[in-house]
Image (cartoon, rainbow, N blue to C red):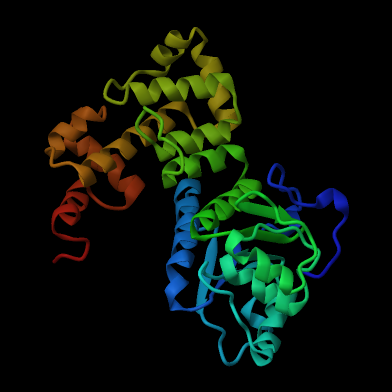
Length: 330
């Protein structure tokens, strides 16, 4: 699939990733050697964080170090992105035998990504000569000598047709974020950048539940404003009528908006936000569970335990114990 000539309208640029059929949920990483495996781990952390934000294991991956002696077409399929992870200190030299073993994976992939010296593998395979790519300045001369005919992209990452490229290990993180943003939308991409520390975090404490519900709301003013009010009053347990009054809308309109956009009642969403805060306080502080209950709007620890167990499958006391003496403590 990588060798297909896509219509020009579906070309990829840093401003707009439009070839959605080549944006996959599965990634196969091939590291040049063990010295660059940390780059792959950084890319995998981006995928892990995306799964954490979205709330399920949507993205998956596998990691291979060095070209295996035996490779068949199953290494990378047409529903996967094949990422060649190279360093920035020396070209990735590949033998004809290695090339013959890796070429099927390049050919099968829905999208190919190259990081650093990974660009030399595609040049050796004869599939990069006229593709626009971001190449580390240290490799410009040697890449030209290897037969590259296009202009280098001046950015640190580039997406052109079904090729994504990054000049270095740091740029590789940005490349993965951009690919996920193209699949999930700019709202998710911005949240991902914030969670990864690529941009300064917002002043308000981060809340995955608040972010997830805002995403589902798709900009609906009533839902988004109500979510902000709920997040600011986690300890107060406002009623639906009180939230609606603060907003200047009817309780009926608030209920209807939540049902239409989130498929849940305001009270259920409010409780999710409070339980998420309780979970964070149990894991990150030494506050007594009774104080955490009140801080999160639950009148008694038993009420917190009831809803906490329903949401997380464990009692608050179990989470607290695991925080101090380990998850697998007896």
